[in-house]
Length: 115
Image 1 (spheres, rainbow, N blue to C red):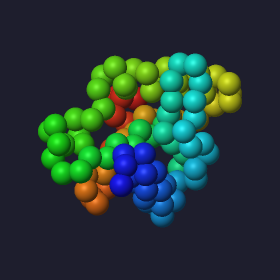
Image 2 (image 1 turned 120 degrees about the vertical axis):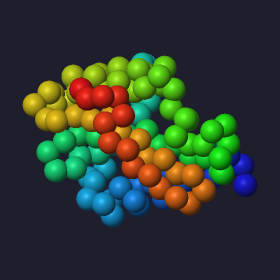
Image 3 (image 1 turned 45 degrees about the vertical axis):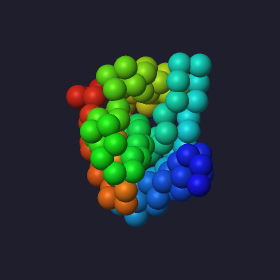
């Protein structure tokens, strides 16, 4: 299988996980000229900007090292844009990560340190 097919399968696994855990999916692959956010979801009274990362095995230190500071900053800027165009400043916001290593899923909240 090529990486695009594997990526699509893992994204579907991630979406299923989120929905099973009470997330309402608002956007998938939200794109603007600044960048992209994999998933924007709502859970309870907060909007979650979620980066999905998959790694097979412990490649390059494992999936926990797959999101660089540069990528986090780009996600933050796209999230700010999304908040502005959708008038969401009154909700709690969080940049999260859903990490898939082989078939194990780890969900990390607030990886940017709060917004």
